[in-house]
Length: 153
Image (cartoon, rainbow, N blue to C red; front, top):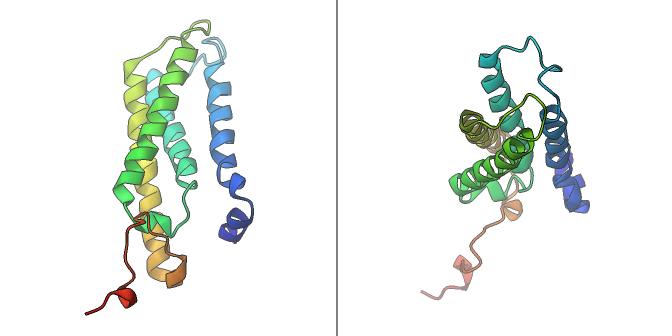
């Protein structure tokens, strides 16, 4: 259902990530008084969950067919995007009253990016196993691939 919407309007693939980044920015803008009573240990878990969700939203940038090729490279890209946004988030928190930047938050953000990417890989694997795409919908990232029918023996 969503694949047809994404094919017709490719910009919609970006919308969930943009919304997720806006929500993370809003949460980062909250002062320490707004977050009073929030245990410190849960802060790292919150960062991990936020960035796992963000990574899942970044994963939507590629179609399910494209996820079948170079899967782990895409996971690393998604994790890198989550880390990059985590860096900007930590920089932003440095300007909020009662909040500070933390390298441990960046570790939690990166871990969340990795978890989000791996969960998406698992979901795509399950979907491909039980609801396979037609062969023409698999999109290869390798432009130099030669069609087997055109090769002379």
